[in-house]
Image (cartoon, rainbow, N blue to C red; front, side, top):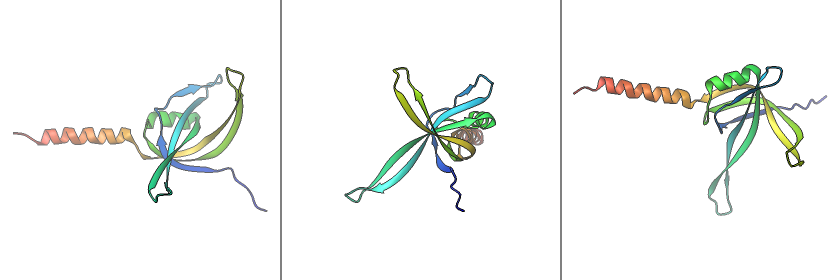
Length: 131
């Protein structure tokens, strides 16, 4: 018997700084967007870049970890599942949303760490150079 699995795996960059909210039960949740890029040749044979935006949902400890370790521009690898839901907006229009419920993620490149490394290199450089 074949089993179909709802599984998503993406590599991309966070589109904004992480913000966490809490449910009425006190469970932490973070909603953030992830940018992924695809490269294609157009009709003229030139390479073009297309950016896709994905809505992500992190729950509980994953949300807290994301807040502590990531910010806008952080490159991550994630695994999760695709979820769909519907809601009615303030204008009484029915909206359909697709989101990725993140089960796990790994930081591949972090601007926070890169900034610290640059600051450390700059301060070391200034200390070593004397006239």
